[in-house]
Image (cartoon, rainbow, N blue to C red; front, side):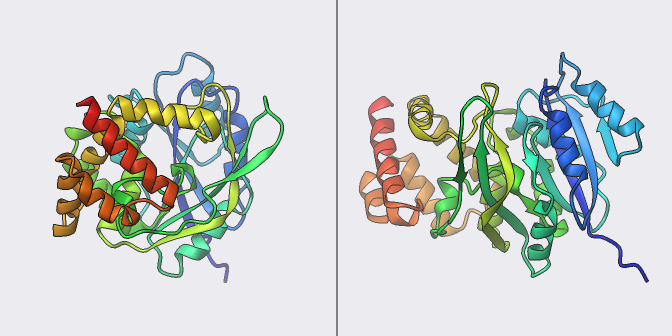
Length: 302
C-alpha cells in the first residue's frame, strides 16, 4: 500500500515579483517527499506576476489564487489576508513563502520530519546570497533561547517557518479575533514566534539552512547585516517602530503576570528594572546592551 505524502500548504505573498517568481515556484514544486499546495495572493502587481501565477495554475500545478480580497499594502498584511482567507486542508502543516527565494529540495521534508517529533513551530537558518554581490553567508544559525526574548525580538525569517495544523489554527483564531489592530504595520514572523512562546507551543530551530535567502534592492528588510542593518535598526529605534512593535504584540500574548511586569517596565521607562533583567530579554550580551541603549534613546526622544 502506498503511504500518502505529508500535506504542506504554502502561503505565497506576491507583489511585482516577475524577476524571481519562476525560480521560487520551481523550487517549491521540486520539494522531495511531500505533497504541496500553494495558496497565492497578489497585492496589486503592475508587472507579469499574476500572469506567471495563472500560467502555473493552468498547467495543472497545485496552486490556488486568492483574488477579490481587500486589504494588503505590505508583505505582513498580505500574509494576514492569506491566513484569513486560504481554505487550508485539514491536517496540513503550513509554511510561508516569499516570492524571491530559492528552496532547496529537502527544505520541507526536513521540517516535517522534525515536526513529527511533536513540535508546533519549526524555523531554520538561512543562506543569504545576492546576484549583485559575490559570496554567501549564514543568518540565524545557532539560537540560544532566553526566558523572555520573544517579547523583544523575533526568531528567524517567516519563510523558514513551518506551523503544525493545531498551531496554525490557533494563529488564525488569534488574527481573526484581533482584526482591528492588524490594520497597522507589524512583523508577522516576530508575531508568530511571540504567540508560540507565550502560549507554550513547542519550537524547534534548525541551525542548518535549507533555503537560499535572496538579497536585492527591492527587499522589504533583507538580512539587515552589517552597517546597513545597524543604520536600519537605529532609524527604527529613533522612529519608535521597535517600541510600537513590542506593544503591538502585546495584543496577542497570554499576558501572564511576568509578561505584564516586563512590558509595563518598558512602557514606564523603568531603566533600573531593565538593567537588572536584560539578560533574560535578548539572546546575546551585545543585544542586551542594544536594548538598554534603545531604552535610553527612547527616554531621551519622548
